[in-house]
Amino acid sequence: MPLPMAFKLTFSLALGLSIMVTAIGLVAAVVELIRHGPTGLLSVAPRGVLTGLVIFASYFAAATLSAPLLALLWPVRDRWWGRSIIAGSLGLVVYGAVGLASVLAYVHLHLSIIDYESPADAWDSLWFGTLILAALSAVLGPIVWHLRPRDS
Image (cartoon, rainbow, N blue to C red; front, side, top):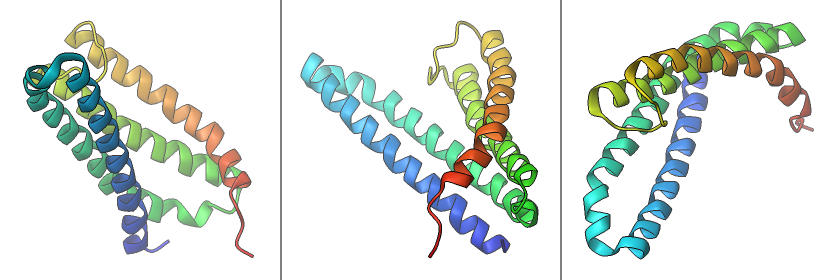
């Protein structure tokens, strides 16, 4: 896959995920408005917007890092082991970028995207979570690839 095509694909996915997070944030805002009124919404809105920006940035950082990797590994996609390497590598990059953004936001901005108990817990869960999710990606990636709709 040529690099520009890989960037188009990964940035399209990042945009789609960002739209989904925006929709979830809007639903959360409506719930907050219903439960606590305008004052409650105004008290949490700045942190909510900042959290959304951190999440968006992590998606686009993941897209930027994964596009060259996808382009580089694309030639091995025709083998099951190649698909596993692609999925595992992309899982490592994507979950690592998103997890790192979550940890940095918790440690430096005091934003709790994931419910960590302490900064040490955040750093520990980053490595463990990223490796587990990358391994799951390596296992499930070839299965998902096999089940995808084929061009006729």
